[in-house]
Figure 1 (spheres, rainbow, N blue to C red):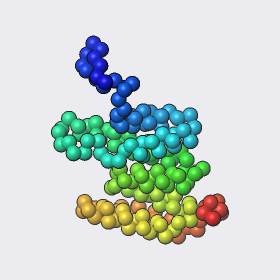
Figure 2 (cartoon, rainbow, N blue to C red):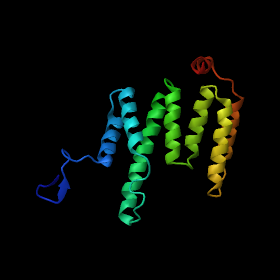
Figure 3 (cartoon, rainbow, N blue to C red):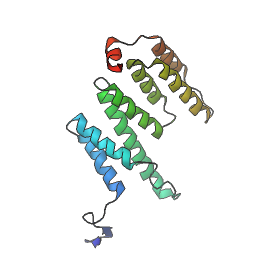
Figure 4 (cartoon, rainbow, N blue to C red):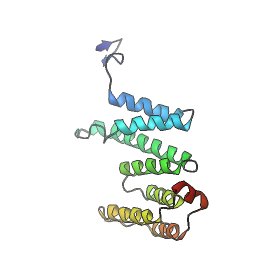
Length: 170
């Protein structure tokens, strides 16, 4: 299970499976997927593998950079695909942004994207809950939603869903 080839000892990838290796492979597939379905399948795998910060119980300084890099890579993958499919599959895009929100709880842009998709889907009541969640989450760090975010959510709540949104919701 351990091999050495002109360097340090390493695990033999033919005999050992490591979730982190699978996550990196899935991230590569999500970035380079030939179709949105292929990318969604890769993200599904990432979603199953990424259940929290890398080595979250390890407090050593050396793990901080790889931990943050992986978190950002997963966040970027969810956000990028959500943006790619938000016109064609807003329900899936909403799920992806909700998952991204769990990785970056204080990112107002994610909440705005969620609210925009909720409006497109005719979920006006959900916009109120999304803004309330953002307000509560930011209060944890002594912050408030920006006036722009509050105004954007108010605008979305006043808008009537488009025919396309109503058709998709039914």
